[in-house]
Image (cartoon, rainbow, N blue to C red):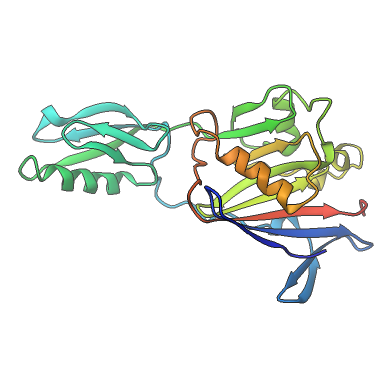
Length: 264
């Protein structure tokens, strides 16, 4: 059992680390090899890496905004939807990247651009509609796709939303994929038989907005298996599914948590 770092020259440059834990007597253990020194610690799902606390709201894919000019109202535009590529088109200044900006930041950018056109523009950016938070279920399920996030969703409940697993599903290799930063994604493998037949409801992960639940058809037996599936998912066009998950052409770290051994 070892920590493995893999670097791949692909459309997305990925550093993938695998943390493997084993059921052994006192419970699950994380076995980690850092610089040749093996470290062990109790595996607690609550201790997995967490996303930073959200600050001021940032504009997302599918959001709808108004841009209002106080004195030059002919330039005002309402109900502008952010495109799947993260941009909007605005008369006189062309396409603008808006995803990831706050309303105040976009206000400043538009003000700067319009200074070249009109004298002292006074602009207000208003967020009119927010894209619904979603979760995604992919792979060997009856109804793959995007579902609106609801408080209290767990892994088992999301699988039910997807109509249950297909006959070729690998029930012991279900993976929850979570983005915890723009350059950091974690994958957590769960054996659904442990949850439902082994009464391990502590493994019924609480699902967070924009999580991906992947039910594979073939066993995820190696780092290469996991990385290849991730590349297949994240390189698909963003407007098909996975709004907000564009990470191609950036350096991204994946941590894959996989429990091996019998249920304690």
